[in-house]
Length: 173
Picture 1 (cartoon, rainbow, N blue to C red):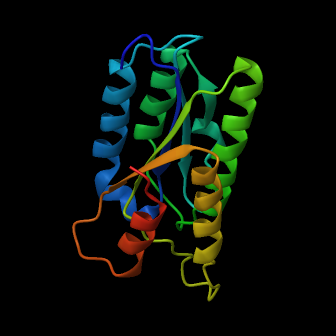
Picture 2: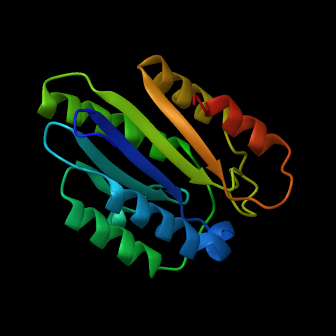
C-alpha cells in the first residue's frame, strides 16, 4: 500500500476448532500481508483480533504501526492450535472499539477496513444455545454505516448454506 494512504486495517482471524486445518495458511497469509505493508504513524496501521467465541486476548493487538509486535503476535498465534466455537459479535464490537480508539489518537478520519478470514459458520458447540446471527448482521451493518469496509475471505472448502450468505451480507468490498 502506498505511503500516502491513511488507513486502519483490522485482521479478524477465525481461530475456532473448525479452522485447525487452515491455521498455517491463515497465520501465514496474515504474516505475509503485514510484512508487505508500509506502516507508519500517519499512514497505514493494523490491528489483530483472532477469535473463537470471543477475541483471544493473548494475541489481540489494537491498531498500531509497530510491525515487529504485529509479526510477533501473528507468529505466536500460528503456533497455537485453534479451539472453541465460533461467534462473531464480541470481535465485531472489539473492532469498533479499536477504530474509535484510533480515531481519537489520530485526530482524523481514515479509511477503515476489516479483513475477516473465517469458514463463515457461527457455531456454539453442542450446548444447545442459539446463535444470534442477527446480532452479527446488526453489528456489521453498524460498522459499514460508519464507513468501514468489510472484506470477507472464506476458508471453507465445502458449500455452506447460511454462513456464506451471511458473510456476503457483511462484506462491503
